[in-house]
Length: 174
Picture (cartoon, rainbow, N blue to C red):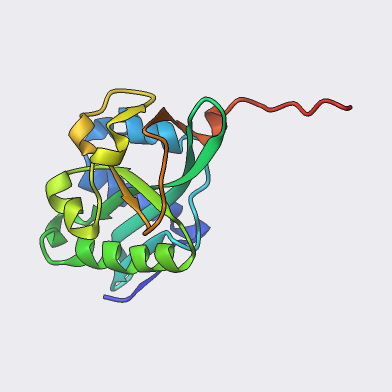
């Protein structure tokens, strides 16, 4: 299947796919709190269509880790969605592989997600770097995963947050 960048015109189809792929309470999940009010990265978010029907989607979003002194830029991956009748066919793996290659090429040094470590571990995601991070909602600690580019380090502790929840920094005149 050929994947291409998701555009604004794909938004309604993406929402329908997410409704079909996930349970109705998906908007209450912690990952949605991190994405709320934030625009996804257009250059990383991909879709796949089959005979005009949207059958796969992956999205990436900016977020940050606040360590008490400064914000560290992170990229939140998700959701990854495949039409229910095509799950298990390799489309999810294709979405992950192609989009991660693009993220790496674009210099996204830290990518995080909330998902099954058994699945996402094959793409380099692990829970160890996020073990002491605070998150804006409930999460199984083993499912809060990070993938760090070689040589990238992050604080052991910090607060994971969306860019819309970051405090406004006021610059004072000298």
